[in-house]
Amino acid sequence: MKHMFPLAALLLLTSTLLLSGVPSKFDTQWIPSKPEVLTYRSQGDQGNGLYQISISRNDSIVQLYMNIISPGFTKTVSSSMTSEMYPLQSVSKIIVNDQITMDTRCTYEKDRLTVSTLMMPYNRTISNSPTFSGSVLDFSQIPLLVRTLPLTNSSEYSFTALNPQTNNLMPLTAKVLGEVLVLKVECVRVEVNDFEGQSIYTVEKGARHRVMRVEQPAVHRVTELIQ
Figure 1 (tube, one colour):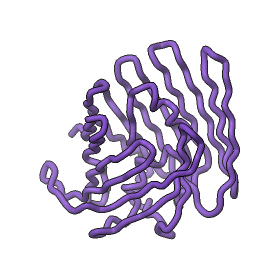
Figure 2: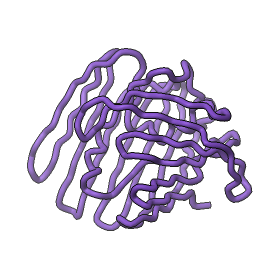
Figure 3: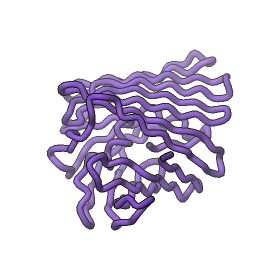
């Protein structure tokens, strides 16, 4: 569910995570065949908005859709992946002030991903085909990361991430901070650090593993599930 609205963060389009020291199997069995749609209200110094995410699973394929809307900014993302969380493809589109449009397409092979971003009205295309070893996660899967990891007490996970602003690899970590009660729902708090900085996810312990709340202290942004 990560999102930030400043123009500097718009290159969030091509984020890819390369796993290191993570579980050999993610838990995706809870994802329903009928789309699960969650809607969030996001508030921060850089503007307020709505965020919606839809997830469904058909046979061995997981489909994910995201939509972010705020004044002067919209972002839509669609992606598909295997039930083992290996990405197949993703498409992302950002529109800023009805003037700047960025379309990004990502496809995945065994050890290579291909990323292409078209920026309009500049008619500029930025492409890259980095190679990797081991498993790989597309940026669109970040909202699923804390929902599919085994979040036991004090568990920690480390990742290697591709910074979408520089296309350089950088570390990403996820750490369980403890438990908390939110709207009478038992939850786990998870600290995630990546190229966007620190985010604190509050994740439901129950079978649906819903993200109830996301805090981004550096930008004073709070995103909460609308009941």
